[in-house]
Image (cartoon, rainbow, N blue to C red; front, top):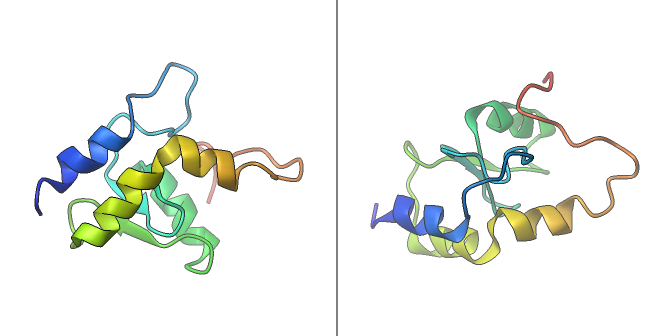
Amino acid sequence: GLGKERSLQRCCPRPGPDSLCVPPPDPTWASLNLGALICIECSGIHRNLGTHLSRVRSLDLDDWPRELTLVLTSIGNATANSIWEKNTQGRCKPTPESSR
C-alpha cells in the first residue's frame, strides 16, 4: 500500500525494555477494532478472543485502505492500552508467550 508501513510505524514509538507488545519491535499484525499493532504471537491470542473482541489483520498480507491506516495512526498502542486495559478486573495482561 501507500507507504502504510511507514505511516503505521510512525504512530507508535519503539518499545522500552519493560513493554509487552506495546508496540512490538517489528509489528506484523494489527487489531482493527482495538486500534493496536501486535506481534505474530499476540495475533494468535487475539484471534482466539474471537472477532467480536478483536479483528486481526496482517500488515503485509491484507489490504489497508487509507481509512483503516488512519484509525491505527490516530489511536496507536499507548492510547489503545490505556482504554482497553483500564478495567481488567484483576486479570493479568497476556504476553507473547501466553498460552492460547
